[in-house]
Length: 477
Image 1 (cartoon, rainbow, N blue to C red):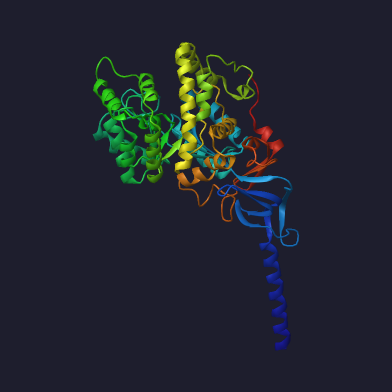
Image 2: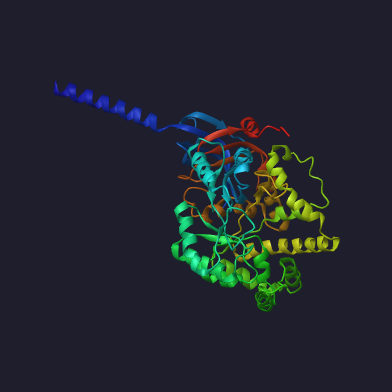
């Protein structure tokens, strides 16, 4: 009798083990026969099976998949290429309450273009953005994951609505208290009216609090001083360009001396001085210093191309223009009108300046500076459209001298590492969140292939090419 009981228990245990094994090897999603792009090495892992369960990559193997795994959804990705979800490291969700719904309606445009995470560099829609951030992370709202600075920090009577005004060094702690209470992901400083001493005080205090800080800089401040205080990233290339001038000290002193007079040095006047005194050897030293200090840069080359040519180019037939709400399109007028007032001489100078900026990018890459791809898409930035503009930025980075692999890193692993999220995002690897883009062609051969999207996987949820097309807003205009 005992023998029978033992045998029964053994059989029952075997059945349970069989059931457990079967359950363990039944997953939500399998990608089979796929070429995995290793963005860190710029190489391919061909013929891989990627196993995904509950939005997490469980395994990546080159073993035959049919005998080992079962899944509710299986995608035969023969001849296709898998990359991490793309990051746009500089966008703007802004325009005030009147444009809140129009901004929300554009979130799917990012996903439709394989952009699974965006870094919102400050604006005036924070309460709504916080809600969108929670909803997209939960899969309730279709859109990218959002990392946001919330309100910008600036001086008195700032250019951008919704900014927190910081007039004196004594006001810095309270301003950062406000941002911490809001739960922002990083601090963004803007330079419309902020003073140099307040700027540096914000950087120093943010560093003490463990808050990541980036932004524009007043030209009265030297980038080296900001890095010494703990600046994590400089947005755009103007400030590195200034720091590469052989006359940076004297130019900074003139700017400071005239700040409170009736003849302050204009931003564009200073750019002319800096262009004439740019020193390649000094630039190399600066880039080494940036790399040593882990100070990242967001070049935003594509928006410069678009805005610098507003005076001459007709955007009325842009394929993405009909996706923009009427209120957002209305905001474009400010930059368009400004461009029309520019002289031909200034336009010619801007083209030379743009070429100089582009030449800096591969030198920064060579020096080891962390480069982050960012489009600057958003209201007020005329014809720089959400989603597709990140791909245009990648094209510009390659045109400037980066390899496709290097450019791809600027929109994947670099952003994840910079934002402290590399354990979850940025590469196709076991244990990472399944934010992925399946491409029809190899992006290591041509960066434009990032636009040839077969499907997007966001948190393990698959969006086919048809579904991605259906995400695009109605072309009602």
